[in-house]
Amino acid sequence: MARETFQTLTEPMYYVLMALLEECCGVDIMKKVEDLSGSRVKVGPGTLYAMLDKFLKNKLIEETKAEGRKRSYIITAYGKELLIKEYNRLKQMVMDGANIIEHI
Image (cartoon, rainbow, N blue to C red; front, side, top):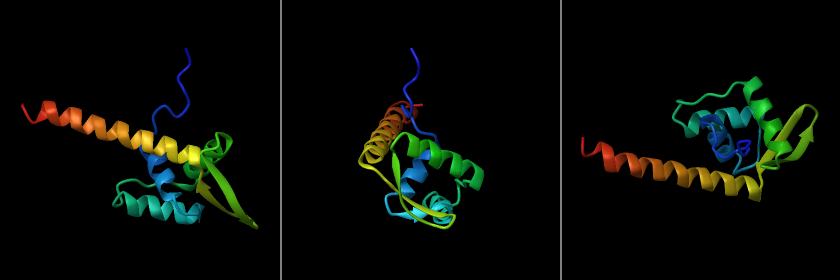
């Protein structure tokens, strides 16, 4: 059986979707990802625009405006659902780890 698309998110995907809880363009997304992650995660233009294209095709985000080459995006209800699902998965992983690691 094929793995479900977006069953889990990569770290950059997670931060891009968080950045898109507010409408912004590509340059702003890259800055927000860096800010949200405390400079730990950086997304370059090539990676970002490939990711945005994939998110658009899968209806996780939608384009809100286009001014020349500058495009703005925002997360959709479906994208929020996946973001929350991933947040809960990560939170559960931390709790599972804490139960084991704290007893080492």
